[in-house]
Figure 1 (cartoon, rainbow, N blue to C red):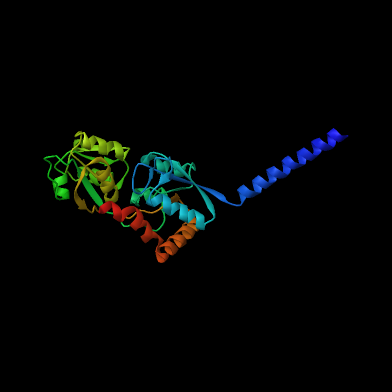
Figure 2 (tube, helix red, strand yellow; figure 1 turned 135 degrees about the horizontal axis):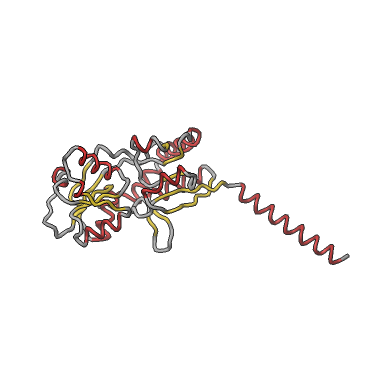
Length: 258
């Protein structure tokens, strides 16, 4: 009799503990966010294995205001939209700008940052780049699936450059290392990232440019996410009004340019 009572009591405690854990987990939704963490100062992994950067701070703040636990998943930049479409992730933040092709597949929130581009070169190179026209004379790198990749593809279609001039990379760090090792002559990417890699790898930003294909980045959601877009855009508006996004710019971007 005592053994049965003891077993029953233990079973009751186990059930109550399980219910408590379920109730605690149910109190906060897990929000799975895809990124490509090779793009400092927007997203990267620090020495402790933590996701850090402008985008990471922004998405965590949005998650906190929506009462969501943010879970970051790192993947190749070119795989992010497909992962979103397949339901592997709930949203994407990866300094990704809207294009007509992307808008056909996913929804974009309002922009959270005004983007520009920079062209990296080796400090000891004979390459002289002071404009996009100069840049098009050389063999150069772009990251696959970016608006810089779109820009290069469009210039090929216009007959302004040869496809053989373009070296496409999935990982910007690999591209920057190839530039440092003189396997490519120049590399175009987002300006803040260009300055960050220049400082880390001893490269130079030859020129700052603005390409017509590049819009301003937003957060990506599955197609038809009208209610979710409204919620996130409302939070973005609050963060802009409160100065939170300006603080992120001061923390992650302005120091990069100095």
